[in-house]
Length: 316
Image (cartoon, rainbow, N blue to C red; front, side, top):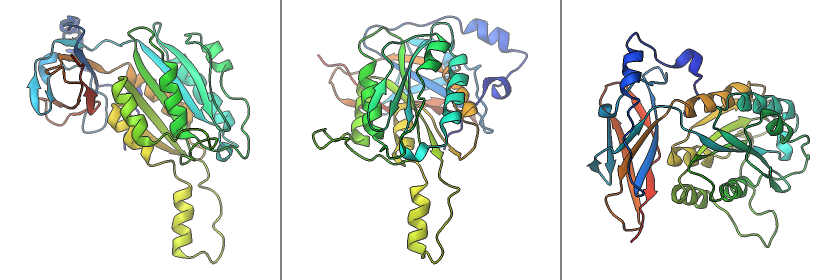
């Protein structure tokens, strides 16, 4: 499982960083068919590595190496949608949720914009993107209904719709949830599955980060409960296992926190990681409209790159 990292203590630094950074200011641009891949690189201890050059990377499309035509290691502007679980099981976590959101918004850079959404009895998203931390904090949930469900995949699906056409800023969704998806809110709604979310994020070039919260892990186990019942109770306390897969496939990150843990650190870590990623680009080798697998490698030993697994090629 991925742990989000804070820049102040975990980013690798060296005396040669200034020279390396100066060399990396050159940006190699691609055309309209350029496949953009954002890459997070960590060392053996999980620390962010930010001093690599274009020559340290290799990108393979369907197993074949591709020339890197675009490279940038400077922070790239983001359009962020924060989706927060306000189902009944989140009751009692509202102060943590609001404090964590405030820490996240304080870390947005000048060109970053965000919206705030929630999912429970309904899915709601604030009307416009903004950089203003006060406006974003005001959009955070103020109440949690004890009997509200967890329409997890529907919430993410509607967040993907909320991006619209917009500008060229990259699309990022950060979702917090403590439970498993409960399906459609009404009988008339179509079912949105984990696979639907993965496919849509791939087609729309969106990155998904997720924080799973075990918010009910302190409840007591009834006396006399057998092994099967105990296992079911423990599984009920865990976030939807599909969250980690969605994050991995889209190139984002996933972490779990327990009841009472600092949500602000997890949220702030997402912001710091987004601002220390590498942007690699290459020309799509085929215009066939099909799904292509992506594999990113780094030449230095002991380093681990993380990026999206696939994309949909443009079509003639």
